[in-house]
Length: 83
Image (tube, rainbow, N blue to C red):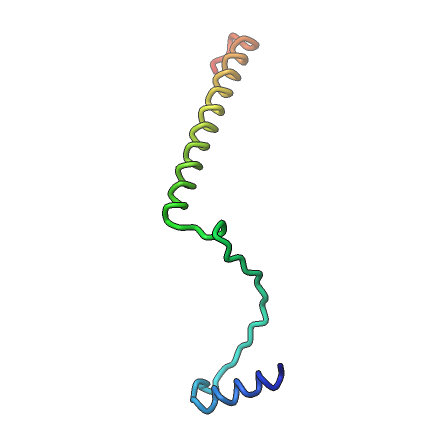
């Protein structure tokens, strides 16, 4: 592997691909997943956005209902306060 890297660097120098100012080597490793299920098309993203919007509407309604119930309960418990 070292020999391959050495040859690659020599080739880059011969082709004047290096300016000689700064060199950085990134040794990061990333796992790849190119399955059909992992690829998001524009259509798939639009469906996902619609699905999430629907869930958010449901959550908001539930939250509002719960807040309404809590307010009614608070008025029953503390009838003289303005809630």
